[in-house]
Image (cartoon, rainbow, N blue to C red; front, side, top):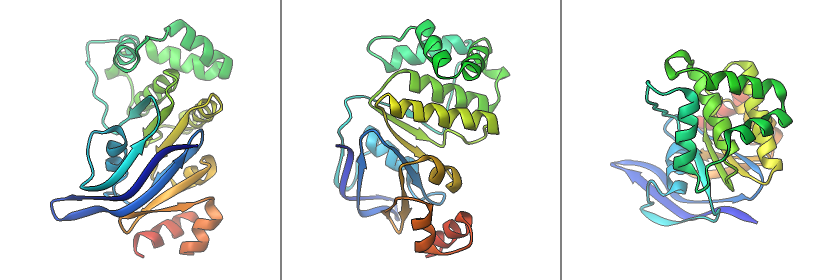
Length: 234
Protein backbone atom coordinates (compact mmCIF):
# COMPACT_ATOMS: atom_id res chain seq x y z
CA UNK A 1 0.00 0.00 0.00
CA UNK A 2 1.22 3.47 -0.92
CA UNK A 3 1.16 6.52 1.38
CA UNK A 4 2.99 9.08 -0.79
CA UNK A 5 3.49 9.01 -4.54
CA UNK A 6 5.24 11.69 -6.58
CA UNK A 7 5.90 11.57 -10.31
CA UNK A 8 8.00 13.95 -12.43
CA UNK A 9 8.07 16.43 -9.54
CA UNK A 10 9.74 19.72 -10.44
CA UNK A 11 10.17 22.87 -8.39
CA UNK A 12 12.38 25.96 -8.62
CA UNK A 13 12.94 28.89 -6.26
CA UNK A 14 14.11 31.83 -8.35
CA UNK A 15 17.09 30.35 -10.20
CA UNK A 16 17.62 27.43 -7.81
CA UNK A 17 16.34 24.02 -8.83
CA UNK A 18 15.22 21.82 -5.92
CA UNK A 19 13.47 19.01 -7.79
CA UNK A 20 13.74 18.09 -11.44
CA UNK A 21 11.38 15.34 -12.65
CA UNK A 22 11.76 13.55 -9.33
CA UNK A 23 9.86 10.37 -8.50
CA UNK A 24 9.31 8.87 -5.05
CA UNK A 25 7.06 6.21 -3.57
CA UNK A 26 6.64 5.83 0.18
CA UNK A 27 4.87 2.77 1.55
CA UNK A 28 2.29 2.76 4.31
CA UNK A 29 3.14 1.63 7.84
CA UNK A 30 6.89 2.02 7.40
CA UNK A 31 9.48 4.42 8.78
CA UNK A 32 11.03 6.19 5.81
CA UNK A 33 14.06 8.45 6.17
CA UNK A 34 14.83 11.52 4.07
CA UNK A 35 18.43 12.74 3.97
CA UNK A 36 20.37 15.31 1.99
CA UNK A 37 22.71 18.24 2.37
CA UNK A 38 21.51 21.60 3.69
CA UNK A 39 19.27 23.22 1.11
CA UNK A 40 18.65 19.98 -0.80
CA UNK A 41 14.89 20.28 -0.34
CA UNK A 42 13.97 18.06 2.63
CA UNK A 43 11.74 20.63 4.33
CA UNK A 44 10.32 21.77 0.99
CA UNK A 45 9.38 18.16 0.21
CA UNK A 46 7.48 18.00 3.49
CA UNK A 47 5.74 21.27 2.63
CA UNK A 48 4.68 19.74 -0.68
CA UNK A 49 3.26 16.68 1.07
CA UNK A 50 1.23 18.91 3.39
CA UNK A 51 0.01 21.18 0.59
CA UNK A 52 1.86 24.22 1.93
CA UNK A 53 3.55 24.53 -1.45
CA UNK A 54 2.68 23.30 -4.92
CA UNK A 55 5.11 21.90 -7.49
CA UNK A 56 5.83 23.73 -10.71
CA UNK A 57 5.27 20.50 -12.62
CA UNK A 58 4.45 16.89 -11.89
CA UNK A 59 2.16 15.38 -9.30
CA UNK A 60 2.37 14.52 -5.62
CA UNK A 61 -0.32 12.41 -3.97
CA UNK A 62 -0.71 12.22 -0.19
CA UNK A 63 -3.00 9.20 0.20
CA UNK A 64 -3.18 9.37 4.01
CA UNK A 65 -6.53 10.45 5.43
CA UNK A 66 -4.85 12.47 8.18
CA UNK A 67 -1.37 13.72 8.98
CA UNK A 68 0.63 15.67 11.54
CA UNK A 69 3.78 17.65 10.77
CA UNK A 70 6.63 18.54 13.10
CA UNK A 71 8.40 21.50 11.49
CA UNK A 72 11.87 22.78 12.27
CA UNK A 73 10.48 26.07 13.59
CA UNK A 74 8.34 25.85 16.72
CA UNK A 75 6.83 29.00 18.19
CA UNK A 76 4.80 29.01 21.40
CA UNK A 77 3.03 31.62 23.55
CA UNK A 78 5.36 32.28 26.48
CA UNK A 79 2.49 32.84 28.92
CA UNK A 80 1.03 29.35 28.50
CA UNK A 81 2.15 26.22 30.29
CA UNK A 82 3.30 23.23 28.24
CA UNK A 83 0.09 21.46 29.31
CA UNK A 84 -1.95 24.30 27.83
CA UNK A 85 0.19 24.22 24.69
CA UNK A 86 -0.49 20.49 24.36
CA UNK A 87 -4.22 21.09 24.68
CA UNK A 88 -4.11 23.95 22.18
CA UNK A 89 -2.10 21.86 19.69
CA UNK A 90 -4.53 18.96 20.08
CA UNK A 91 -7.54 21.23 19.52
CA UNK A 92 -5.99 22.57 16.29
CA UNK A 93 -4.84 19.17 15.05
CA UNK A 94 -7.66 16.79 15.94
CA UNK A 95 -11.36 16.65 15.17
CA UNK A 96 -11.83 14.90 18.49
CA UNK A 97 -9.47 16.19 21.17
CA UNK A 98 -7.63 13.29 22.81
CA UNK A 99 -7.80 12.97 26.56
CA UNK A 100 -4.50 13.98 28.14
CA UNK A 101 -5.10 11.46 30.90
CA UNK A 102 -5.52 8.71 28.30
CA UNK A 103 -2.42 9.92 26.46
CA UNK A 104 -0.34 9.68 29.65
CA UNK A 105 -1.81 6.26 30.36
CA UNK A 106 -0.82 5.06 26.90
CA UNK A 107 2.67 6.50 27.33
CA UNK A 108 3.01 4.69 30.67
CA UNK A 109 2.07 1.45 28.94
CA UNK A 110 4.87 2.04 26.41
CA UNK A 111 7.57 3.23 28.81
CA UNK A 112 7.10 4.49 32.37
CA UNK A 113 10.29 6.58 32.41
CA UNK A 114 9.39 8.32 29.19
CA UNK A 115 5.87 8.99 30.41
CA UNK A 116 7.29 10.55 33.58
CA UNK A 117 9.60 12.75 31.49
CA UNK A 118 6.70 13.90 29.34
CA UNK A 119 4.58 14.53 32.43
CA UNK A 120 7.32 16.66 34.00
CA UNK A 121 7.55 18.75 30.82
CA UNK A 122 3.80 19.43 30.96
CA UNK A 123 4.34 21.33 34.23
CA UNK A 124 6.84 23.76 32.72
CA UNK A 125 6.60 26.90 30.64
CA UNK A 126 8.39 27.19 27.28
CA UNK A 127 11.03 29.53 28.72
CA UNK A 128 12.04 26.81 31.19
CA UNK A 129 12.45 24.16 28.48
CA UNK A 130 15.55 23.55 26.41
CA UNK A 131 15.34 23.36 22.62
CA UNK A 132 15.74 19.58 22.86
CA UNK A 133 12.96 19.28 25.45
CA UNK A 134 10.59 21.22 23.20
CA UNK A 135 11.29 18.98 20.18
CA UNK A 136 10.90 15.90 22.40
CA UNK A 137 7.60 17.28 23.72
CA UNK A 138 6.10 18.06 20.32
CA UNK A 139 7.25 14.79 18.76
CA UNK A 140 5.50 12.80 21.47
CA UNK A 141 2.46 15.07 21.34
CA UNK A 142 2.01 14.49 17.60
CA UNK A 143 2.48 10.75 18.04
CA UNK A 144 -0.33 10.80 20.62
CA UNK A 145 -2.77 12.21 18.03
CA UNK A 146 -2.80 8.85 16.18
CA UNK A 147 -2.66 10.25 12.64
CA UNK A 148 -2.26 7.97 9.63
CA UNK A 149 0.86 9.88 8.54
CA UNK A 150 3.47 11.50 10.77
CA UNK A 151 6.01 13.85 9.17
CA UNK A 152 8.96 14.67 11.42
CA UNK A 153 11.51 17.25 10.26
CA UNK A 154 14.66 16.56 12.31
CA UNK A 155 12.89 15.46 15.52
CA UNK A 156 16.17 14.64 17.28
CA UNK A 157 17.98 17.90 16.49
CA UNK A 158 19.41 19.35 19.69
CA UNK A 159 18.15 16.58 21.97
CA UNK A 160 20.27 14.66 24.46
CA UNK A 161 21.03 10.93 23.96
CA UNK A 162 18.30 9.84 26.40
CA UNK A 163 15.61 11.87 24.65
CA UNK A 164 16.87 10.68 21.26
CA UNK A 165 16.49 7.09 22.43
CA UNK A 166 12.95 7.74 23.62
CA UNK A 167 11.94 9.59 20.47
CA UNK A 168 12.98 6.70 18.24
CA UNK A 169 11.39 4.22 20.65
CA UNK A 170 8.06 6.03 20.35
CA UNK A 171 8.38 6.43 16.60
CA UNK A 172 8.62 2.64 16.40
CA UNK A 173 5.64 2.29 18.74
CA UNK A 174 3.66 4.56 16.42
CA UNK A 175 4.60 2.34 13.49
CA UNK A 176 3.41 -0.73 15.41
CA UNK A 177 0.09 1.07 15.94
CA UNK A 178 -0.30 1.52 12.18
CA UNK A 179 1.19 4.97 11.55
CA UNK A 180 3.32 5.78 8.50
CA UNK A 181 6.32 7.92 9.50
CA UNK A 182 8.55 10.08 7.31
CA UNK A 183 11.53 11.51 9.17
CA UNK A 184 14.49 13.66 8.19
CA UNK A 185 17.81 13.92 9.96
CA UNK A 186 21.37 15.07 9.39
CA UNK A 187 22.48 12.02 11.36
CA UNK A 188 22.92 9.33 8.72
CA UNK A 189 23.67 6.72 11.39
CA UNK A 190 20.30 7.05 13.11
CA UNK A 191 18.45 7.02 9.80
CA UNK A 192 20.15 3.78 8.77
CA UNK A 193 19.62 2.24 12.20
CA UNK A 194 15.95 3.03 12.68
CA UNK A 195 14.32 3.42 9.25
CA UNK A 196 12.94 0.63 7.06
CA UNK A 197 14.44 2.45 4.07
CA UNK A 198 15.60 5.95 3.24
CA UNK A 199 15.84 8.36 0.31
CA UNK A 200 18.73 10.67 -0.48
CA UNK A 201 17.85 13.91 -2.24
CA UNK A 202 20.65 13.89 -4.79
CA UNK A 203 21.00 15.92 -7.97
CA UNK A 204 17.39 17.16 -7.57
CA UNK A 205 15.96 13.64 -7.43
CA UNK A 206 15.32 10.92 -4.88
CA UNK A 207 17.60 7.89 -4.60
CA UNK A 208 16.23 5.06 -2.44
CA UNK A 209 18.41 2.84 -0.24
CA UNK A 210 17.34 -0.23 1.69
CA UNK A 211 20.16 -0.11 4.24
CA UNK A 212 23.55 1.33 5.19
CA UNK A 213 25.49 -1.21 3.14
CA UNK A 214 23.67 -0.24 -0.04
CA UNK A 215 24.42 3.44 0.63
CA UNK A 216 28.11 2.82 1.27
CA UNK A 217 28.37 0.56 -1.77
CA UNK A 218 27.00 3.40 -3.91
CA UNK A 219 29.21 6.20 -2.60
CA UNK A 220 32.20 4.44 -0.99
CA UNK A 221 34.12 5.43 2.13
CA UNK A 222 34.95 3.63 5.34
CA UNK A 223 32.05 5.10 7.31
CA UNK A 224 28.53 6.32 6.68
CA UNK A 225 29.72 9.89 7.18
CA UNK A 226 32.37 9.34 4.48
CA UNK A 227 29.69 8.04 2.13
CA UNK A 228 27.37 10.95 2.91
CA UNK A 229 30.12 13.51 2.22
CA UNK A 230 30.92 11.71 -1.03
CA UNK A 231 27.25 11.88 -2.04
CA UNK A 232 27.24 15.65 -1.59
CA UNK A 233 30.10 16.07 -4.06
CA UNK A 234 29.03 13.48 -6.63
